[in-house]
Length: 103
Ligand SMILES: [Zn+2]
Image 1: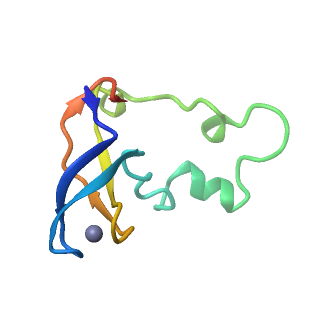
Image 2 (image 1 turned 180 degrees about the horizontal axis):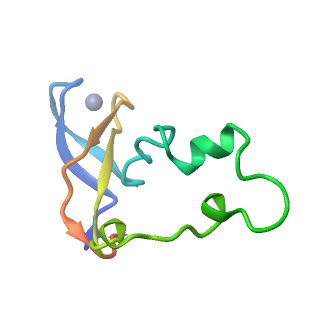
């Protein structure tokens, strides 16, 4: 999928159509990183440190079948920045695509 670097788009701050810069931002942060039972939480608590085999706190935990990744594409998140008022607007709804490039 190819995305232009600049587009004419409605700016809710200027209340008119303006030229806006298009920027691809990473598709969301990691959710629930410090939930109960997560490895990152256990590591921050001090578990799984030291030498030797760390078992379930090791670098490569056993991945059960239902946890395996099935999706091969990601939805793109886009940030539009108005060139007139310099304000940015986040656009979340993206199309699924393997690779996203800016023209
Ligand atoms: Zn604007």
